[in-house]
Amino acid sequence: MISHFELQPGAGELQGLAEQYWAKAGEKEKESEAAAYEAGAAIRNGEHSLSNLEAIVRWKSERVVHYLIANSGEKIRHALRVAASPSSSVQDAVGALTALHGVDLPIASAILAAIFPERYAVLDFRTLDALGHARHDVDFYAEYVAFCNRLAAGGMVQPQDNLPGPTPLHALERALWEWSRKHANGGHS
Image (cartoon, rainbow, N blue to C red; front, side, top):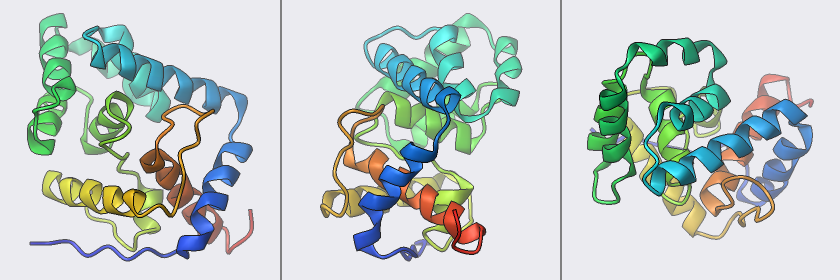
């Protein structure tokens, strides 16, 4: 089954929304996101450690961090090796990560986005709202990533070079999230 995504904000709004997202983020949010992308780069470079995994998970869900210690060091290293392999499919990378205690699909998507910000987007209820959708399974995530990559490749949004995850894909993600936040508040910020 192919999912249907429909961009809710106007394409011309996306860059401004991405900028608004960052401008509204608090210092703790900004520091946490920067730490997550630094940890993702470390994982991509072979540092498959609990501390790197924890930095990313802390960025997306502080309440999930304590579940990570239930995983053995070897299980974490294996999952991160698979996730960091450029040859892993979306399904294989997500499967390896969700095999870890405390990691569900949205958290796995955040881990993948931090490791490969040019390839993966975070699956978040706000970004899905901005795409007119709310289903969450691994095949859906693969379609979501492909759709977001097509949008980012279309040049509607530019990389935010001075921010963590400086890719068009992550700027798109910020824009979608900001649109949903504004939309949820009745169009007010």
